Image 1 (cartoon, rainbow, N blue to C red):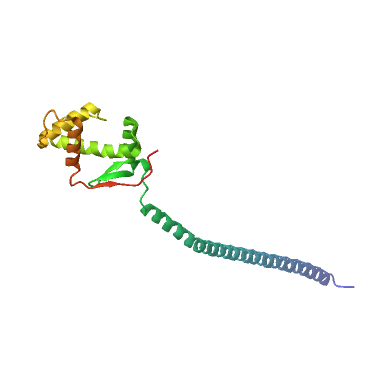
Image 2 (image 1 turned 30 degrees about the vertical axis):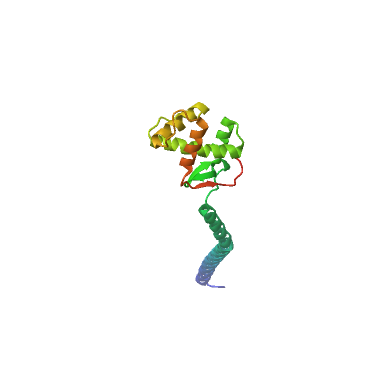
Length: 206
């Protein structure tokens, strides 16, 4: 018959063994969980690093594409800037009405002035231009002699009186009863003497 003490020891020993096995099993399970957690954490870190590498590569490719596009557009932009600079440097064409129809000693008589004089007198354009040159010289000379000069287009009477007064001021020596046409021819010849008159072949002002 087995000894009662041995049975108690065996039973106690068996209980301790079961407890040790359970403790070992628990320790092994915690270790595996730690290993798995470390593995998953490492995988997540690797994925994050791979994603950062992809993003960096995409950013570098975008920068290269932008640089290539800028380089391709640079010649066109430079050509456009050069064209704008050249256009800005070119003088702006004057309107036809501001272009000179004639010059008196370098001073312009514009097409607009000729058109206005033509409309006021009813003369043909060539006659209006020639007569406007005569009237301009007459008014300038009378002003230098401090004679009163009527404003605007001179009437026939005003012109005859101004020519006679100027002839007296200049001492041309014509009598008071000399015909107006004679005074006109003498004053005109005197005013044109030494003048440089340029008639320009330009279209009439609209």
